[in-house]
Each structure stands twice: as structure tokens, then as C-alpha cells.
Image (cartoon, rainbow, N blue to C red; front, side, top):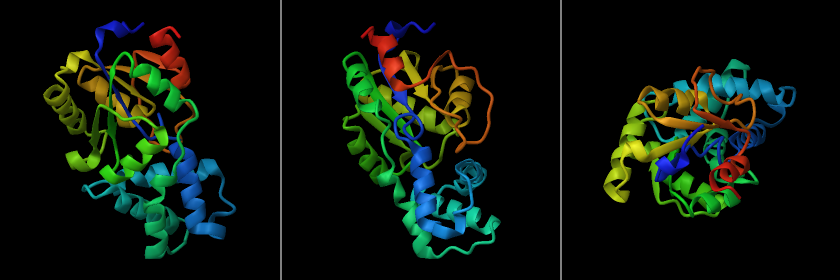
Amino acid sequence: MVDYQAYDALTFDCYGTLIDWESGILAGIRSALGSDVSDATDSELLREFSTHEHDAEVPYKGYREVLGLTLRMLASARGITTTPEQEAQFGGSVVDWPAFPDSHDALVELQKHFKLVVITNCDDDLFAASAKRLGITFDEVITAQQVGSYKPNIANFHFAHEKVERTLGISKDRILHVAQSLFHDHAPAKSIGMTTVHIKRRGNGAAPEASAAPDQVFPDMKSFASAVTGS
């Protein structure tokens, strides 16, 4: 069991933990490609997305471009040629990805006890749109755009720890990381000695498989917030 009183800040992954990225990804792909993927199952499209997204992130490029390239690679593997307009449409679809229904209320309760920080694989402006959907003002925001790399690169975590200590006065040992993805978050966070909580919402088909041992597991943000606050 995690001793929550030992922490002053919670760092969160956003997409998959707070924002329903799988629903957003699927809606974006189907909207961009239309009838060309009408015969594809959701599981197939998420698996194909996970196959290509991480490759598209290296070398670093903005997340709109990452998504556009991911769509191009996914479509090409299916014998489909994408247009720049389709790629741009999917690249900007992040602003439409919905928040999980329990995210806002859980974050409001948690912010009564902790500083709330986001470490997200996204651009500043795209995350700003997601923050509006969450209806919360985070105490600090770290994006891939600021770092120039994407998780699971541990540089993103080191950057976050340095920024949080500089701006909020909270050291790494007083930070608890909360996330859904074993690949993007738990594996790298555990490799640098962080305590982590796994929000295990669903099968995580949009992320590559990975092995990691989070310190505690909850099925959603509501149950995590209840355990922490006793409410």
C-alpha cells in the first residue's frame, strides 16, 4: 500500500488516464479514413496505431505531425493512400478527444490535498484544449514539446522533476506518478525509482505491451481519489 501522506505532488499522464484517448483515436481514424476502414474492428485499429505511433515520434516532431504520420503508416499497411488533409485532420483530432467521466471530480478532490502536475506526450496547445475538457487548472504542465522527446524517454521525467522542484519547491521523492500506460509511464518511472499508481482502465490497446510493477492499481480515477481522500 502507498502512504499518500508521504507525497506533496501527483504527476499524471493525460491521454489514457484522464482523457479517453482510445475513443478519441478510433473516432479520429474512422472520421479521416471513412469507408476505407469500415471493415476494421476497433481492436485492430488500436493495435495498428500502437505499432506505428512510437516509431513516428522518433526523431522528435510535434504531436500533430506524429499523428499524421501514424495515420499514413497505418493506412499504407492497409493499402490505403492518405491525403495531407486526412493526415492534418487526424493530427488535430486531439482537441476532440473526450475526458473520462470521472476525471474532473477526482482531480478536484485530489487538488485539495496535492499539487497536480501533468507529464504528457503532447504539444502545449493540444494539451490546453484537453485541460479545458477536464475543467481543471494544473499546478504545472510538462509536455513533450517542452522536452523535445516523448515518453517512455526518461528525459521527460527528469525534466518534470527539475521543473516541479524549481517552480513548486517539491523534490522528486515527494512526487507520486499516476498513469495508465505501462509502456509510456510505469516502466520508465519505475526505472528511476518513482512510486507509481496504475489507473488500469481497459486493455490499453493503443500502447505497445510492456512489463512493469506499479505500487498500487485502481480501475479508474474515482476509486483512486476515494482511496486517497477517504471520501
